[in-house]
Length: 572
Picture 1 (tube, rainbow, N blue to C red):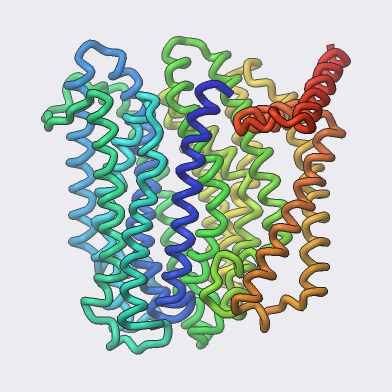
Picture 2: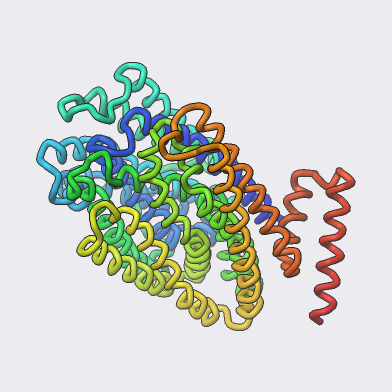
């Protein structure tokens, strides 16, 4: 696995810690505000605005423009001056964006909220949004400084600093619960400035700490930032076309994100049932669970390989870059397809595990959305890795085409959902819109990769391997579902009994047993179909964890190696 494997593990461990503390934050948030009702939906809307902008910055403008330029800058003689200019320019852009959105908070929130929201309800959403908006600057600063650290091959603090943000936010919610208790059904008059500060303000303070902590490893690496004004000599001319295409992607993603929040926030009001119909709060909680494996593995792999791909491409070693990309995509698919198969089978008990602070009925509103979103896990991961490869070529047009296909399909399904789907089912349908759109853009993605890399990207091997993975995934789902369904019946785990300490332990047991059953099925099928990438990854992880010290594990690894060798011989 070499440096990519090492960096991926560092990123994955940090992301795991971040997601675990993030889930604690979600539990406390649900305990304080609930997952349904005006307060929960207003808070989720307010926190969505900076999250959307951050996603656009990290996935589009900055990753498309900044990282390839950082790789080149670090190899130049006057790298210090160029880096200072890049960071200064980024901070100016971020401050401008943050100030503009804060000044237009009322307008921004009106885009995200449906027409059913009343004036006082909108005022609460505006207050949450205003407190959360400074996160845009600090999220962006975190992205910029983090990518400099990634280019310098220093991933430790970059991967772990987000834990600090969650800790600060958790402290805010704990203080809120101690002082005010559960406020999910409190009237609008309850939400005064002190309560909003403890919830949204604490989250913003945490995000600020997350970004500022990155200056520590930068200083240790020998880089001392100082403001440097001007854009001359930082390669903006070569980055201009990429920026234009990235701006197009930004606009498309904004439209679909706004529609999701607008439709989801309006569904309970349109149905006339604030607490019995899934809204934006339910959607965002489902998204929090769904995003765990994606951010833990796919984003970590993409972050680790991007600087290396940029380096090889800048040295005209396209074949090496294609091999890195293909290996990363197959490894990502192995992980994502396994998680998809198991998560589909245990969507309700999984919701109970991650959100024990809500009742079973609220869980039943979240789990169908989680099911719908989970379907697209493998596809979003492939799209992410492919987009990063195009950006390494300073190619902004190809990611734009992929995003246009995906966003266009999603937009059409969202409009159809808004017009024809009953409010009770609209929020879950929004999840299916995301999944269907990513699935349908996969053929376009593969064609474009083949055009870019040619025969260096072995499309035949890539396709055959994914057929094997798909077969293993179907059998894995059946094994996990049968285990989950059987245990739920035996242990009488239902919507009515899903809340409480005993119910949580039962949910954990169901999830663990289903995961083990799924893992056995997944491993068996991939070994029977002789999938070398699976054997390689198992062997690498075992050696990283030093499990090969044990005789049983050592023998298994030898069997995997001999099986792979015989398979290679037979295919020659």
